Length: 319
Length: 293
Image (cartoon, rainbow over all chains, first blue to last red; front, side, top):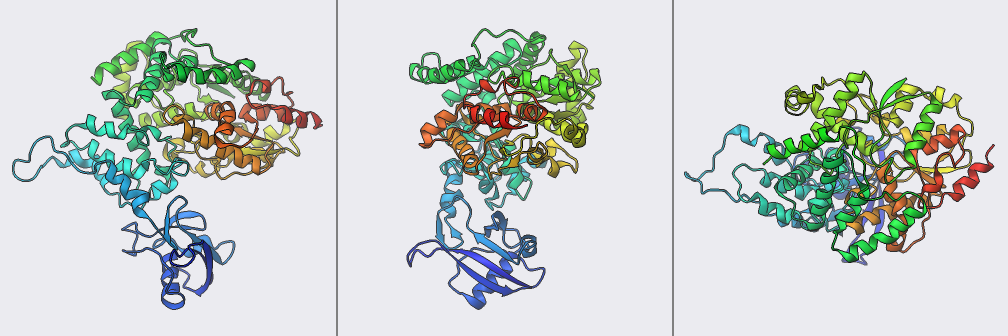
């Protein structure tokens, strides 16, 4: 079948301006996108740059956007994108610094962030026999996470990265989970402290896009939530987030439901004059519309005492 | 047709226009609501699971005892409850533990049969679109509407629905816009996050998301945006003036709650749907609606 590949081009050694080259090629019905790219490079245009390594969906190196959707080009079939017209477009990921054509800067995109979470084990105690052995069952959950092959699909799907490229992102935070929950590791609190800095776990919007994008079912969002729940349990170190969570929990514990006005004030901090001043125009706008929730005048829900008991029991159990 | 109604905190707190419009619209549609009053906040994804799962299990047990499915008007409540329900249904041992440790003292037990549905799903899956169409009094002809689903009514898929309806659920709001006679002003960010969950941790990113989604809808010529999630509404409407200031652009896009949108097409006037309570002026929408016959 004949298909036109419309490929993003950028060559820093020429003018560095982005453009597009169209290549019409004859490929078999079952061809993958990578088959097409290899054919173009081998037979038509040897200057076309793209990444690929294992060619069988294992290494995660060949991530590109195929007609707008992030795909591993080695396993994506061309025909999945040609139903409407015999053409596909190929672009680098949405948010990455491009080096040349479809080759982008993996260090900036992911590896620098993975390095930042200290992706190594700090054992609690030195291994007695050179190996730090633990029962197989203790690694069951982590084995799933360790099957990550760093394809970057989760980061590509992330809602936060397009507005803030410095967010650590789901791939690095999932790597952090792998070590934070390793039963042999020490100082989880210290590890979490790094993750609680700005651009870390509290910047995640838990939108579950990462889970939907991950080709291996690793569920990065759930890993980030587990890190946050762990931080809640051990005491949150990010001050503003700590105030917010503490206030949220306190109003549900005391009244059964959320006192939104109180939450807004206490999240800023009762002694944070600048922060509280910032709330004034927001409150004024809401009051003009007759809708500002009045803080602290928050009636208890029926059954609030039962909710309080659940809190007390939960807090007791996790001590 | 009757549901155990879980309105959520925000529908009476930060978005007090939502609760009464949902109640009015449900009555018009003959959907009977028995409100769950003696129940707690879902945790909204802020409380850790070890606290929110027992609180939600208690809510499910109460609805189960009433023999009714739960209906929410908040995607976040629906999302957090669906995820808790998924864990409790999938793992009987976990359910037994929660029952024993947290619910038995009150004489409650959750057997794992309660269904959690958002009003949007109720319309398509229980109520029926033909029946809805027969009740439309003021199809919203000529109005361009952008859908904004937010996150938890679409993801994570296994918790939202383990059934084949998932892909259809992803488009209900698009479909509804056309069913109610309006034109779809589609936007690429309709299923992304509104930014509300990080308003405390990273306000700049949160407001950037508001600017991005509302700005895109405006560029697509939308008269307003509709959302099934009051937390999205809090950010997209309530913080739109701040997003405009941060991003240096004028937007002025009215954001309607799902029940308000339904209400207008069912013939309620904008006042009855409390449109005046919004931060971004809904005047242009009201004028256009008043011209409809």
